[in-house]
Amino acid sequence: MNKIKFTFIALCITLYAHTSRAQCDTIANICAKHIISSFISDGQQYRALLLNSEETAEFHTTFFGETTYRIAACSGTSDGNLIFSIYDQDRHLLFTNRNQKNAPYWDFKVKATLETIIEAQLDVNKNPGSGCAVILIGFKQK
Image (cartoon, rainbow, N blue to C red; front, side, top):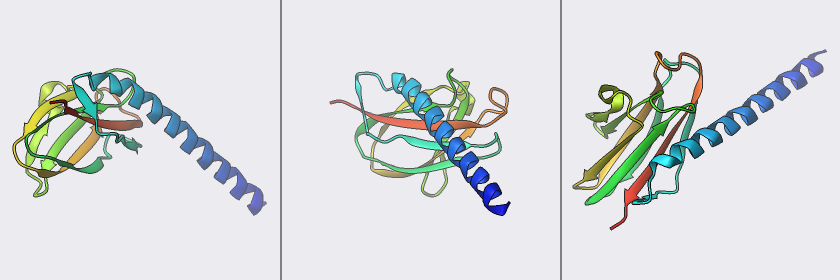
């Protein structure tokens, strides 16, 4: 009995993980439309499965001086479901889209190289359940 129960639980976890990965793949493809041709993707896809709107995903990245970046943030099939905030390494808020109607992307130029923390959270008013948070970063071609 215990072996059957364990096998069933393992199967459920495997199916959930596969479904979550497929969901994140779809969202990443949708989000990629915000990395327009004047930007080059950094090649990374920052992803996290958030089980509720109280969870926060945290991603660490470095932005290099004298470079213009675009951060695209998505969850779900429409824009505006994901709140993202960018902090410096001392946790000073540099930007949040919360005050910008959850804009799906932000363009900015970094004067000096900067270590940052990007936090992503589902908007409880637009996505009260679980979802995949996807952050994509592109840099401007010179």
